[in-house]
Length: 358
Image (cartoon, rainbow, N blue to C red; front, side, top):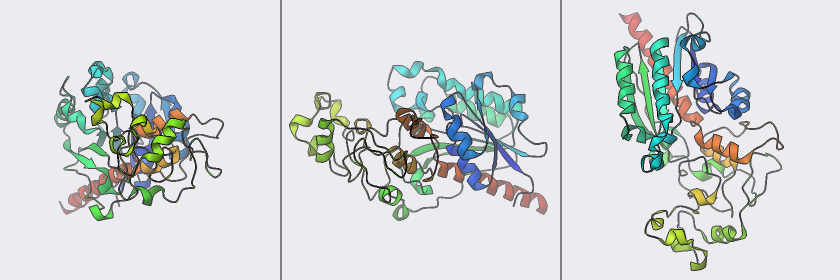
């Protein structure tokens, strides 16, 4: 048990995946900050914390410091938008995307606030960003400010997340060496798609559950219904479909490499990585394993490790399907947030024990 209160401010908080996980671990989240005001309802409703709609480049240190109590152990976390560092961006013209500079704004606030603990989560390709050594510069700034820095590419199923998601996780501490806790699941213990969403009510393409309006699937065209019906778990359009169902763009040499689009997930494995378009079968292997449809919003959320009861909209009437799909795909898996939070608590407990021994 840490003697002092641990409190966190969550920059780029989105709908609260990281904050929810922190609170599950036992860390008091004071506030979340994000430029996307559509995230306000989900963040405040589920995380019981204040949401600030603000551009991080406009925020000053004193704006954040006011939320910490005087004797708190201060944690500052920031998961900057990952799109500038995605494979798609790195391979295309979007290298001009200036959102990668938000990481430097995060570094600015760290330098001015000097929190005891810092954490950052992003896509592994941040390590390979060619425009500028953004991540290396970020780490150097932390070390120059007196932080012990640890980072690693983490495989989500190792920590009980039913999704083959790889994320770069960084932890930094003023108090001493810090790292993520050891994996909680071995390969034979990975949570599968069936484990995660097999209990949900069966629905059809374009249908919404009578029990849960978030359990809603997008409407498939007649042709796409024919395609999903011919798709096999873990299969591909190139092998499973009749020739008249194949898209011309996929018959090209480049298109032939996109074998997972319009594909079904496998029941007995973790799911593919959830993206902002994970509720459409044309955007990846996002077909339900056995039902003739794409996964629903609720299924996408659960595969991101959000709890079944997580609220994304106040009612079916106010639900914006595409908006919630984007929010879910952009989110930090709450379970990963909990693992990061538990790692911070474990580190602080170890530092306190060492202080008592000394």
